[in-house]
Amino acid sequence: MGIKAALPRYELYLYTAVLGGALVWAASWIFEASSENVNRKLFKDSVKPGWHYFGRKMDAADFEWAMWFSSFRNHILFALAGHVIFAKIFTLLAPKRRSLVFGLYGSLAVLVTMGWTFMALVLSHCFILYSVGMLKSKWMCLASGLVTLASIKLEPYNSWQESLVTGSFNLQDVLFYGGCGFSLMRCMSFALENCDRKEGSYTFTDLLKYNFYLPYFFFGPIMTFDKFHAQANNTKLTRKDREMWNITTKALLHLGVILVVDVFFHYLYILTIPNDMKLVTKLSDWSLAGLAYSNLVYDWVKAAVMFGVINTVATLDHLDPPQPPKCITMLYVFAETHFDRGINDWLCKYVYDYIGGDHDRIFKELLATVCTFAITTLWLGPCELVYIWSFFNCFGLNFELWVAKLFSLPPFSTIERLMGEAMSRRIRGLFNAANFWAIVLYNVLALNSLDFAKLVANRLIFKGFPVSTISVLLVTYCGVQLVKERERKQALLEELEAAKQKTE
Image (tube, rainbow, N blue to C red; front, top):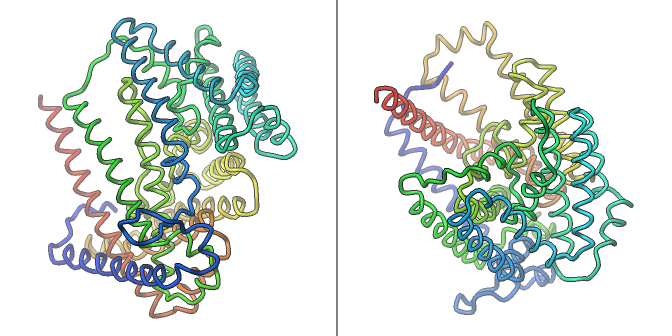
């Protein structure tokens, strides 16, 4: 039953006030815990001197964030600036050769950064999957790609391959596994797309130009080969209305977000506190809920900034990159839970949608999700924590379908039609609020630790029942209703825009 009725204005104001007050309340608890425990022994390794005029230390527990905006910042800015300059020159002078320039510049940058042995290793992966792709068997392409991916994710094969890369510098491990991992996913996309090509085959040069596109090489996101090949070889290059203005605005927005996050890290040690279990056990239920929620929001912000910067460069190259991840605050269904839209698009196209079809049949959906999360587990690197994360997210995705199927049958469907849209919206909101916290708990264990996730679940569901449990669900319910209202308005605007285009 579609929920199309707008929220009453008084409900909108009430939900906004409750949600805003709860976030401020939880943040005050985290701020207090951060200020009072800054000198704890376990904080010394991750709480470092920050901007001196704040008079506070800074949470530097996230290696990836620190890498992007300290040791790696100058290197990536220099490399991307060179890419933008060369790409612009050849786009103006020889637009038919710009995809070749992308590949040549990226290859040279990778060679200079990582050395010839790493380059040879990546080229060997490309050649293997190119050769298999020429057979035009999808199952062989996928199987060969996954076996090759396992070779850099499982011992002793990954250590053996890493030992082939000579030299040593701080970012070698990150760049090695990032470059190899994303390369293999791109090579599989190339091979699978080649299977669908009816006349002839793509060339090895096409694969190299696709794989060595520098903005995507080390850190993604992944654009499937069919989209990249069509866009990179497009010679009719035009800009949409206000496109350069939008690119500039997004670049400035990303810079602003980076500054805001750095400021918050001086006052809220959301990454360090969960690692100190003795301290965590002393915190209030609201502090734990705020920590769990803020860790997922931060992970989304990090992904949005990282992919946003790269996508800005790709947009300058006249590409249409994968969309940034959807904010965790906007999620209340497992089907939309992903922090890397490129990997999600890849998995949906070649595995999830390919096996699951219309996702309406229970057993086909189960098979599709199991296969999808099996590949995701391999991509993330098999270990106990990843197994648990994959199991619960796979279960959550299927459970949504089971519940939807159950409530679409009589007498539930009959009861919902009789109760009216407003009551139906509220009841669905309660279920969505519980689902939201299932998403938080299932994913926070991958971001922090299993012990922290178990403690949060125990405090909010069992020890905190009924006060903390009901309070947290009430606040989440308000947030879900606001998100649904935003989605309703967005859908209405899209309908109006579609109707306007049809009349024109």
